[in-house]
Length: 202
Image 1 (cartoon, helix red, strand yellow):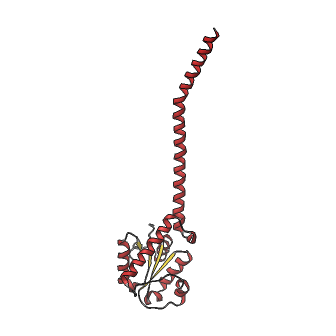
Image 2: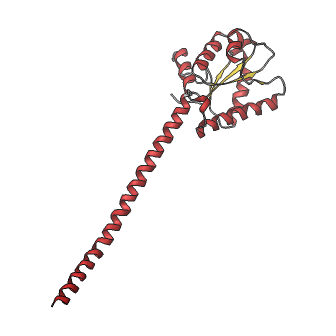
Image 3: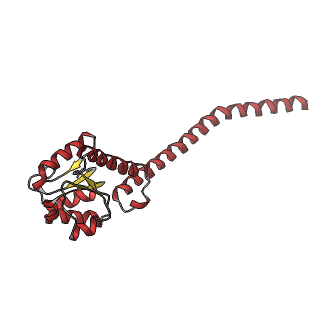
């Protein structure tokens, strides 16, 4: 299953707003996963959604009166929270936090569409860009449990091993070529030395 940059958690009753949000994010070059668009026909919803959450880099919740009441959204949020995903709450109405949502999202930095939609969209994009840049650069001390970080770290480790291997191989190659060039000359010098010693001995 392909890994996406951002998992979009939302209520189907907010689909119109969510579709516009996804279009904005994807226009900036980030791949979003959302149901039912990214669910193949006949697939088991719960299994596919869990895999998508585990594979994403960022969990974006479109928070509203509808999503606050949605058991699907709450279940998705619980998975993301337990997997230490980077959570971005995008608020599209004035619904207050309560219950599970309050417990899991109260200390998060909210982006509120109601304040200034244009400005907030770009704040959202900036948050996405900054976090993905942190992941790519490996500066993730506070997010070591994020599986995407480990994937990046593993790639970097493999790359370092490959580079080291080729560097050592190149040194051996250069050394071998140098020896091939130098060895005949050393033999000539030895032959010349032997000749001089024999001549002086006569």
